[in-house]
Amino acid sequence: MSRLTRNTALSNINLMDDKGTMKKNSNIPVMKRKAEVELKKEGANKRAALGNITNARQGPGPGDGKDPSAGTMKKLTGIIKGSKGSLALRNKETKKSTVKKPVPAAKKNTEQKNSENSKLSSSSSSEEALLCVFPDSDSNSSSEEKIVDAVRSPPRPIPPEGIEDFDLENIADPQQHSEYAMETFQYYKDREAKFLVPHYMEVQTEITDAMRSILVDWLVEVQESFELNHETLYTAVKMTDLYLSKKQVKKEDLQLVGATACLIACKVDERIPPMVDDFLYVCDDAYSRDQLMKMERKMLSVVGFDLGYSLSYRFLRRYGRVCRITMPVLTLARYILEMSLMEYRLNVEVSESELAAAALILALKMKNIEGWASTLKYYSGLDFTKVEVVLQQVLAMMQRPHKENLKTVRSKYSHKVFHEVATTPVPTSVTLTIEG
Image (cartoon, rainbow, N blue to C red):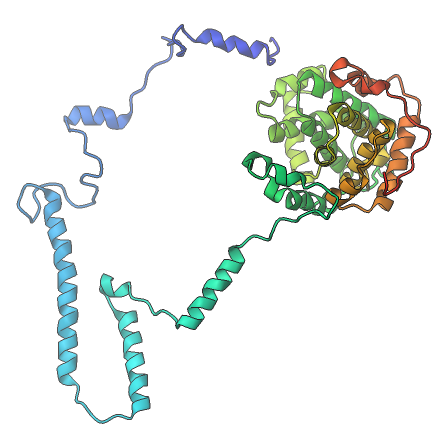
């Protein structure tokens, strides 16, 4: 049995002819619809659109004998007219039978209101059912003001003096989402606590920090091989950590967990996700299709179906844009952030927005770029004293010697496509100040 991959799947093009249509297979019987066969047997004509759509008996109706629906329409019209006539007759009889007696003014007003309400509630006429009682002018205007206040969106926040309004420049482009960019990333920040990963290595009996690092390094290789989005990679790592924090996993099933998390992440972020057989191939057929599908259902039930994680990669792109950094500097920050994916302690009980800010600040310090601190502080809304702690952890990670079994990220960002940012020297110390 040959393995089906994305390349071999293209062989299905051979099933098409020169005009782009699928070739007919003589072995496949062509089945006709039962309704079509019965119509041909009975010799019935096709009904016009919206014609004779009724449960009434077919044949000459009580009308002119030509159109069966004409009698039904006349009957419905007579019922409507009869209801109006009977209602008018009842009103006349009621007026004749009542005897006028002197009634006090207050009681008379009350009786008039009650009679009007009873007419509205007991009327069978479609015209009278459309009647409604409007409130007074004062209450009407106040209700309209309340509706306008509820619909009116809050004003877009304007940065203080000295900080450029980055979103105002793209306010006319609806694709930039400039009007709601601040609210969007504040929403991401508010959701960070919901997906915060607790320390879980103490409860795992067969998995270590080194095993997790090897798994993340392999996921980066998968992301490169399938040319996936970086958001897919970060989602897969986040889902893996959340699953490991809730379930104990054997070391022989750790790669299955990572592959399943990447499969689910592809379905979320990718336009054309890889097939199941592709993931079985990159796992060297260590698992079966049934195992992968079972793990997918189990993982979704454990981590939940809310996969809208607050990813540090999205924060990094936002911070880089508002600080107007160049692509080489942003690529260096992406390299630092991707290296942090393999660091266990930088992925548990750490804020995604703070980690992204720390990676960007370290890249700016490595390139000796100044004048960004006030802009980053405003648009991120972070406390730099907390970012300082994460920054020192990221710096210590970058200063450690590289391991030979974890070289995928380093070799990836040593390429010219990524401006060879992995060769940038790491400083011995970094101090974060508001002056930048």
